[in-house]
Image (cartoon, rainbow, N blue to C red; front, side, top):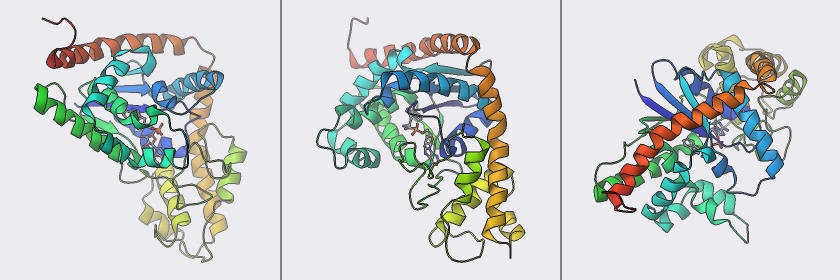
Amino acid sequence: MAKIFSGVQPTSIPHLGNYLGAMRNFVTLQDGNECIYCIVDEHAITLPQDPGEIQRNIRNLAALYLAMGIDPKRSILFIQSEVPCHAQLGWIMQCVSYMGELERMTQFKDKSKGKTSVPAGLLTYPPLMAADILLYNTELVPVGADQKQHLELTRNLAERFNNKYGDVFVIPEPYIPPVGARIMSLAEPEKKMSKSDTNRKATIFTLDSEKDIIKKIKGATTDDEAEIRYDREKKPGISNLLDIFSICSGRSVEELVNAYQGKGYGEFKTDVAEAVSGTLRPIRERYNNLIESSELDEVLDEGAERAYDIAQQTLKKAEKALGIGRIS
Ligand code: TYM
């Protein structure tokens, strides 16, 4: 039994990369573990958001978590900004962080590139993420490959704090799946699939219609050969589709490569599209039943209460170790 924590930003509807790289593991990890999952709305505002849109996205994400299979009887589901300990420990973790290490984060470099005014929150994003994880004595953090560096920083910050002020934090491990940890853009398969991609053909969102899923997969960029084989460097498009197909069909990449020997890309793409539609269809149906229900608010209310009970204990320990406030 391990303590699990992870989060997703409510910056849009989660895409296929979010689901295959992280969220589907949130569901399977519920068996035999203590899981806490978060809608990280404070992380979302590190870049400007439209207030109405973020409100809708928070609700959509809550419904999607449940539609994907998060069971509120077994797991805690809550909104980050509803548990103030995150911002409080986030500040403490900022004070433990060095500017240089934050400036070296790839995500910070990517998101601040070319901007004349960079929000300070973009730089201090990782200490807040560290706080999210450390508040719950987390042992394992299921994430996609792009979060590996943030996880390493979290471990460093926790160790630095423990060495200086005493053993307060559990040191967490990342849980990065062997297949699906880096789902690539359908249009430019050298780039990862991303919520902020302006090319509508690049990203499959988990609530896309069947028609759109088929259109996007059929239009996916591949190569000039006519051979289905796995080679991330030379055949990034086909390899990405093989990863997606493998997870959505439950068949190994090797098995698929053998099964599609001598077959054309057209037939292959039709079958990939069918597998993806089949995976997302039940999620979309459950989402439609949940989105207007009051169940969602009950789950989030209870989740925030249960999360707070755990988080405030860790926060108190950290404050006491630092000697801040009037703690005897
Ligand atoms: P976010 O919201 O960008 O993404 C949510 C999860 O999806 C994974 N992911 C991908 N996996 C495979 N292929 C892709 N193309 C792809 N794109 C995204 C991400 O790795 C992530 O696991 N910083 C986090 C949110 C966060 C968090 C946390 C995560 C805040 N606090 C504490 C874990 C623990 C993020 O931006 O995720």
